[in-house]
Length: 405
Image (cartoon, rainbow, N blue to C red; front, side, top):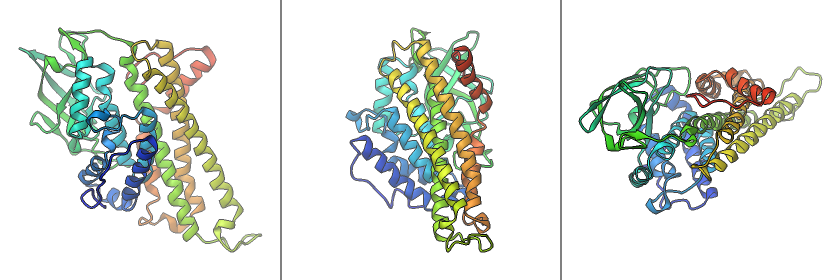
C-alpha cells in the first residue's frame, strides 16, 4: 500500500467536511490494494501508521492538544468512508474511537482531561480487551496497585495498539473497573489466533493478561476506591453498536462502488436475450438491481444518521441523561444496525448478478465485502436487535442496559 511515509499531510482538518475529505483520501489509498493486503493477512502496521499520520486517530481529541474536537456524527461518517476503502481498517478505527471515548463514559473529570490530552498529543492508537462473553478478568489488590489476570478471546487492535482498555471485577466484590494500560508489556500476551473468514486485518485474536499492574489512582471513575454510577456510564454499548452499523454501511458502499466500476468497464451485455443491448450498463435488470440496492443503502444510511442524532442529544447533557432517553436511542440504533446488516449482506451477494461470472476471479476480489460483513455481523445475533425493536413497537418497552444492549 501507499504508506504514510509516502503520503503525509501538513495540516490538520478544521471542519467536519474537511475531516470527511481526509477520510476519503485515506480510503482511496487503502482501496488501491485492499484485496492483496486481505489475501496476505499481514499485521497492519502501515495501515495504522496511515491513520495516525492522516490525523484521523485524533478526530475526537481536544483541539487545544492537536485534535479535531469533532462529534460522534462526524466520527461515524469517517468510519463509513474508511470502511468503504477497507473494512478491516474501518473496524480498527471505529473501535479506536470507542475506546478513546471510554474515559469520557466512566472516568473522573481529572482523569478524562489527562487521558485525552496524552492520547491526542501522542496520537495513541487504542485497542480493547473487554469481550463480555468470556469470564471477567480477575482483579486483586496489591498495596496501592490493582493486578489484572485472565484471558479474553478477542482483542481487536492488539499488536498494532499503543494502549489497551482492560475491564475486570475486583476479587470478592461486584466492582467492575476499567483501566487504560500500555499494550507493549510482558504481562500482555497477544495471541496470533485470528484466522477468520473476513475482517482479516483487525488483529482480533485472543490475549492473555498475566498480572497487568495498574495504580488505584488510574482506576477509571473511582474516588477513594468507590464508583458512583450514572446512566451515561452505560452508553458504551449503544456507541459501539452504531460503530458496527456504520462499518457495515461503509463496506456496502465500497461494494457498490467497486462493482459499478467493474460493470462499466468489463461486464458484457447478454447476447441471447429478447432485447439485446450494446452494453451491460443499458440492460434493464442491471439498472434495476443497482437502483434497488442503492435505494436500500441510502435508506439504511438515513436511519444511521437519525441514530447518530440521538447520540448527540445524549452527549449534550451526559450528567442528566435518563434511562428512557438512553433506551430509546438504543432501540433506534438496533433498528439501524438491523437494516445495515441486511442491506450490506444483500449488496455483498447481489453485486455478482450484475458483474458476471468473470467477476468471481480471485484477483477481482468482490468476495471481500460479503465476507467482511458476514464475519463481523455475527458479533451478536441480529435477531435480538429485531426483538428489541419489536418490544418497543409492541409493548413500549426499552432495553435494559447489558453488555450487548
